[in-house]
Image (cartoon, rainbow, N blue to C red; front, side, top):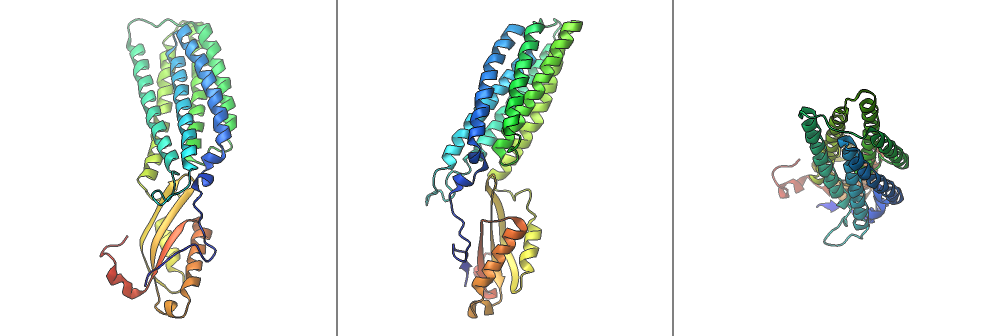
Length: 317
């Protein structure tokens, strides 16, 4: 007696998930940021070697992570654009979530290393030597480059995990560059060269929480947790409020990739809906409810009669 939602009734989903990816739509922005970040990173590596600054080296290292993460995201876009198959019904759309998880994990490792190295310099008996003029110059170069990257991404950074991750990284780099500049000024004016290590500690403390937040969001997608914006109790209540609906069970919601949430549910309806031809119209009503109230455009609903419960497994979510 079950009725699966098909592509009729004006509810065709379409499976061109690569086209739906916000990251894919803004590929050109990521390419631009990659070019800026890669160039500034090379300049800052030279500056770190010339000045002896751990904060500047941390900034260069973080930019290297940015470059790798953006390159990984761009590769994921290509994979996500590949068409769906019978083996991979959503194509490779989730590749960008894997990229975000890897990016966050590497970023966390970098933050931990910066903290370790900075603390080691702070407790060392010998004060580090800094070429403060070079440190200041390359700090300014880094700040200009990061501000340019932020301008490229600021309008779209909320649209996907990878875009958000890229924006957070260049924003953190901008703060890092400000810290490098401040440390260079303090060291030059006062001779307190450990200011470089102090700033490096602050940089590490900025990097680690942001990396953990991005990693948490990516892992939730990979574990198919309910999307953060979706309250399944409200969804269930709205479906139950539709006339002729008796019960809702096996209700699941998950995120396929950024901007693409999916839902499935079994809906128990009155027997007469199957005999009087009302079931197709009821299916339309339920789908419109999910789209209008919860912005769910990819939902699979199975309509069942009350007697069908004996064919289901004993426990239902």
